[in-house]
Length: 90
Image (tube, rainbow, N blue to C red):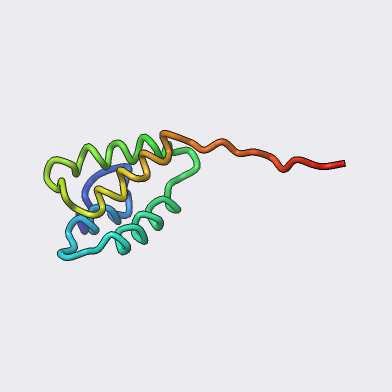
């Protein structure tokens, strides 16, 4: 069996592997993160999962581009934008 990081929040090990890729760029991390996010189950809280990932990797990888992507995801999720409906003119 292949070790994939051991986090329930990253069952396929996508985030784990991203942190292991030497020289990975932020755009590449965004692609991996999107794949991870699309794989989150409907019953799983993506914000809580991102918090676990951030806490797990922050100490050992403070300047890694994936950490920046995770933190951006946390910031965007924490401050949702208001949606406005279209106004109908009579």
